[in-house]
Image (tube, rainbow over all chains, first blue to last red):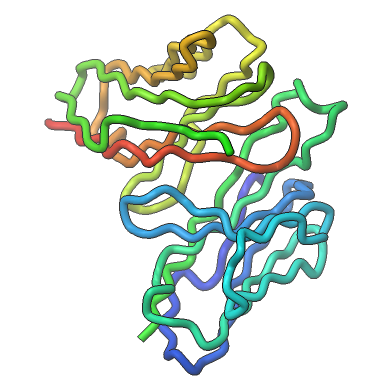
Length: 120
Length: 114
C-alpha cells in the first residue's frame, strides 16, 4: 500500500463551524505533513509531525489545530475559519530523516489527493 | 532558508516533442536531494523524478530526465516525446540532507498541444 488517503475530498463550512480533515497512511512513514495550497501556487508548509510529535509549526493561526493520534493518522481540526482559508489542503508523509538512512533513497514526500475546503 | 526558483511560469510543447523546464536553487550545503513533482488538474501531487546531490549521474525515469549541474545549482527537467497526459503544474523541490523540511519552487504550468 503506497497511498496517502485524505477525507473528505470536498468540504464547505461556515465561519462558525467546527470541522476536521483526516489523513491516513500505511507506508510505515513516521513523518507526516499538512500543506495549504492556493490555485496555481506551490504548497505552503503548515505543520510537520515526527514520531507523532509536532516538530514544525510554521506560525499557523490557532484556528487550525493539528493532531497525530498514532503513526498512521493525521488530523487537522478547523474552527472559526475565514474565507481566505479556502484552499486545497494536502497531507503528505515521508520517512523521518535518519543519518543511517541518508543515502537509501528514503527521502521522498508522498502526497494525498487533498481536501478542497471552501469557507463561506 | 533554501530558495528554489522556477523562472518559467508557463511553458507549452507540441505533442511528441521535447521540452525542458528550468529550476535553480540556493544552498550552502554539499549534500541534499532534489525532486520534480507533477500536479495535474486532478490535483494529486506525484513524484516524477529525484536526484541525490552526491550522485554525479543524472537521474532518468522513462521519458523524464534531469540535467543536474551542482556547481551552477541548476536542476532542469527534460520531458521527451511529450504526451497529453504530461499537461500539469510541475514543481521543483529541495530537501536538505538533514531534517524533514522540503522547499518548493513556484511551479511551471505545462500545456501540451495536440
